[in-house]
Length: 80
Image (spheres, rainbow, N blue to C red):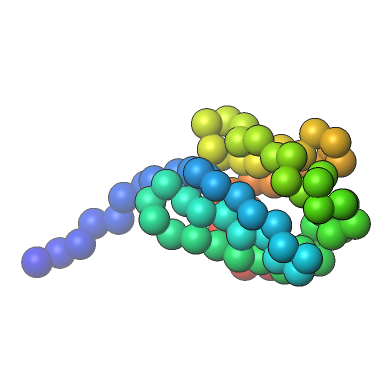
């Protein structure tokens, strides 16, 4: 039996920011968590500003309008 790779673009469905991490739930059931220090604007934002996100590109990215921050889900999954 062989396995074949499927090219699936990861899509965000939910976002949560704590004081130290950005957590993103993906449509395929995975979740990714990264240090908030990777995103200084988010790290310095107020809790209210961190909660004011919206999905862009059908879930390909996340936008925080008040702090002018965009995060690509694909980039979250890459090693830094």
